[in-house]
Image 1 (spheres, rainbow, N blue to C red):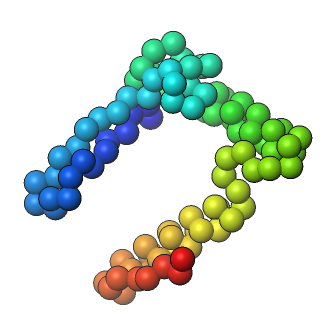
Image 2 (cartoon, rainbow, N blue to C red):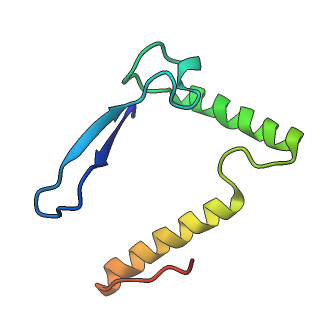
Length: 94
């Protein structure tokens, strides 16, 4: 945790990546860590989740992932499993 590799081209044979280290300015990171590349702890992430939940309740608007996002993620994971099991592409509904 604390870094993300980004694929920067479309060449499948010679993939090129850049590494982005999380740093102050990336979401709520600066509230918990003083410098780039340091992972946020489980407790820190739970504080962020709780804050977003309270914001969502107070404003009656979603702050962060929604139930619909969770459902879509589950559908993507199911499609991946089906694709691997059946050795074929699986189309997702949009």
